Amino acid sequence: MQRTRLSTLIDDLGDQLSLWLVNPWRRVSLVLLSLLLGYFVAVSLAAIAGQAAVQDTIVSAFLVIAAELISWLVYSRRWRDPELLKTIPKPLWIDCLNGFKMGAVYALCVEAFKLGS
Image (cartoon, rainbow, N blue to C red; front, side, top):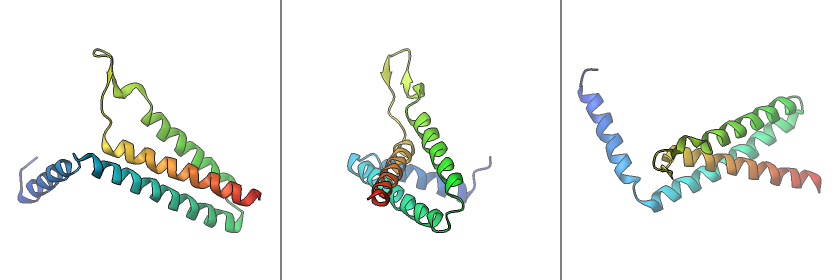
C-alpha cells in the first residue's frame, strides 16, 4: 500500500493510542466503561424486546449465542504459548469485550430478579 499523509496520520494516531493505553489504570478504566456499557445495552435490549413480547425467544437466543462466542474467544487456548508454558497477555479489545459480556449477563440476571419478585 502506498504511504500517503492520511495513512501516516492514522498509523501515528494508532501508535500514540497504544502508548497511551500502556498505563494499567487506563486499561482498567476502559474495561470498567465497557462493563457499564454492557449493563446499559442489556437493560435497554430487555426493555425493548419485552415491550411487545413478540421477539423474546429470538433475542434471548441471540444473547446466549453471543455470550458463548465471546466466552469461547476470551477463554480459548490461543492466549497460551505451548512452548514456554505461560500465558500471553490478552489484547485490550478482548478484555473490553469480556467486560461488556459480564455487564450484559449481570444486567439480565438483575432484570430476571426484578421480574420474579
